[in-house]
Image (cartoon, rainbow, N blue to C red; front, side, top):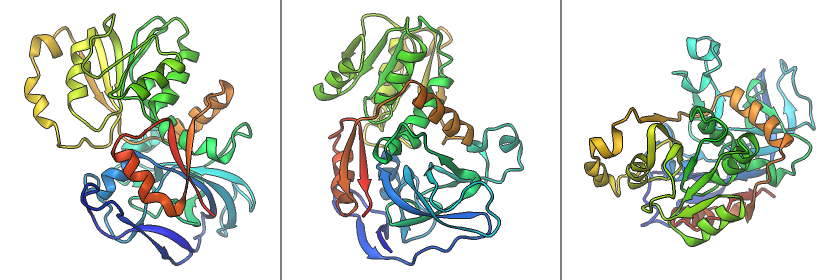
Length: 342
């Protein structure tokens, strides 16, 4: 099969073509597995973290990609939940142990044996991929394949982040960074909390303008002070300065949810600017988001279809994966980037 593979850790600023198009062995499904013919696969910032070694794959070569939509081509002999031809989605959670405390409580995203699609197992930058049937998700009919792809990570991790803010209707929400995830979160928040104001913080005027189009009450640069203090905020950036600025903008008792699997080191010195009374006092909180649970994916897809949330996508060919990743690295973002696999 055709696949774009990563063969080693590299710096995207020094190597602008880290993925190589190759002929790769077509996978064979085991007893509970589904062989999926990939239609589309979304592009995520986590892929940059994998390529540059902040969350490195355990083996190489590896096929990246974890926002996958496709159809079942073949089933293992023990599969009961899907049949050949069914359309499904595959998210970052590829599998977990199913037996530990976290899995039993529905927090399989915290399982010590968590396996990530496109990092610990081959993902969707290819014509075919494998997924255990318990970790595959039916896609609501209201969505095309292209629209569905970003829902599986950008939307789902945004859903988990919004839930972890403990937001109530009437609270002021800050969205720090306005990329693929935030442009879906704002649609969720406006639906669930109609009496709340949403303030967006982004470096580029293009992103700020996009936030206003989607209903932000105010949009400014990362370092700008909003018109009012925030009751909660979600940071989706790869940097440290936005965390410091967001903490400064929180109201007493406010919570900042950091939606990033890793942070880059380029501006880590901004942490030295933390001032206890200005940034942390008055019972402010910081909470991280770790992966997504199966429950998050199922609940979010149902919610997204009911609203309905409409992702904005930029379409690329699989062969242009390096171009899409470089645009993401250099913050050329409006909505989500998605590959068509042909």
